[in-house]
Image: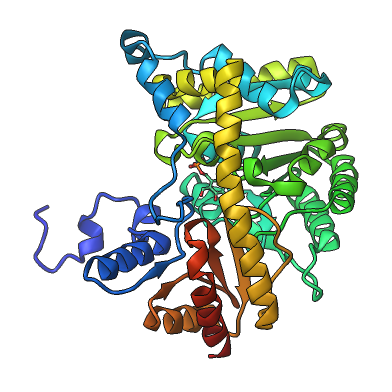
Length: 415
Ligand SMILES: Cc1ncc(COP(=O)(O)O)c(C=O)c1O
């Protein structure tokens, strides 16, 4: 039958209904673009939107040892395919980066992924059935929801903070138990240390309470915990507390660690990551490794070969590792000064924010996130609006701009 002129457009579309009306642009990148365009027109703009670390000169920070190592990789080797699951040396190096050669390393398998994003994807597709929901904090990195929805899963949140702005572990425990009871399984995604967008890191007592909650839920049904540790190398005094929690978690759950070189080697564009999976049982670990490898092959196929070789060298060659650690420490120092100045300024100005001692972002509670961010844009200051809050990227804010940022936040918080 011929198609008539009056047929509604949607009936002519070959896009499946679920793929229609998708937001084509992430709001974060739209804001970043607007800020960049205004700056290019000569306006004085403070762009505290994006999660890349820049130096005091405002340019993206890079680690020279990474670029030098990259230049030395044998071109023909890197041009070929890497194994589907990743180079064994790379996978071993990422496991050792977290656990050294301690007992947890023996309970771990890994596959290479395109960044932490690919690692989270692996967790969602293999540890939830279609139609089921992952569980995460009410403030969270937006793509968790997108990753889940893109593959027929979804996301649900629990209220992250109590009224005193500390982590609501009881809310987490109740939601986790409910997920096990209603879904027959649960997948919790926790982004500590240096939580994006709030800047919050769990103290060791809070980790202890999380472990208890996971153990209790694990007695009711299968529980998987994704530890998205994208910012762990910038974790300050919280740097190891999350690792100390893992033995308690793995006693009654599968633990997935989303490891990424994006932030720890300032290689956001290289898309190098690793999903490290821990389980007590040998045969279950083999099942998990096979499932993860299958997903690699069936989604992005072989991972970035050049990048894996570079990161392997930087993690395993003693001299290169020493250099990488020293260069990163310099960047951590740059960020630490900003955090200190921001905390002092924000507290003096009476801004309300969660505990923040390390990481790329902080969050300030305001009356209305959208209105506050719009008001701040009038002042040339760009932050990411959230529900009742705005996220501030200290990673992209030079030290000299912190007073301007605080002043703009004070103005934004009042509208
Ligand atoms: C919380 C969080 N998780 C994961 C990622 C993933 O980054 P990538 O895929 O570049 O490793 C990011 C990046 O912004 C992030 O903020």
